Image (tube, rainbow, N blue to C red; front, side):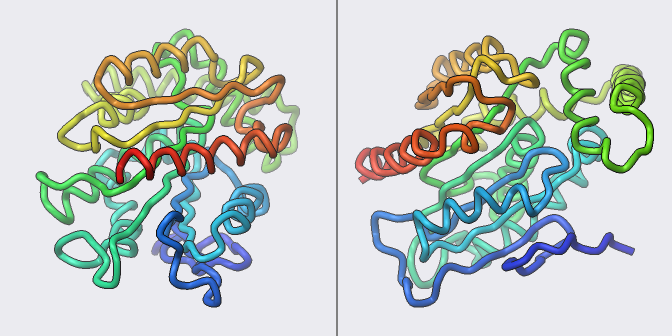
Length: 293
């Protein structure tokens, strides 16, 4: 039996992980310079009450756009088999692009994607592959802007496992009666065990797979700008690792921009710097449309 969806006020569950909020009907149709669909991939173990701060922000900026949210557990990102991750994203693909051609019968979709933390990035990559499985390997998921908030980080497991175990503990500590450090220690052991099992089985770690997939020109559109939001104070994603990843993105021929925030924690840039955060996204969207047009 599939898990029950998490209660998410204002959103209709499509699955236990994918949620839909339609745009304001009085604002339809969407102006030609605004997105028709916004997809938000929440961070690992992100709850509706926290992710809704971002959905509300986007709704205020683009009231006519429908918003889809993907909520995933860090456990799903680290341990769920690849085929299952891809399958879990097909209802999202089918909601946006239900026709065989992969486009809306009324008007072409203008899609803004917002991926948060490595969990968001992993399911973003799964969506790109799910789209090709639905519409053909010669097709690429149509979108106009990709915003990467606090992702991706380093991929060298031994140097990152302490940070990843902390991220998992932050999302799950409330479920356990013991001190935080014990929860983190348990996740630390679990991650090492899972990594060792992957090595024995020859399975590619999900984070490595996601980064590789998002650099594959046969899967991802090469003309879509990627905007990376980060800070030097992020306790989960080292800023040096993120900048190294972005440099590689540019080398591979994908347009990319960086926006650094002062003093904000992991996926906390909007909370500390809302004006800078939303202005950077809206300005990048405008510039992207000018380039594509």
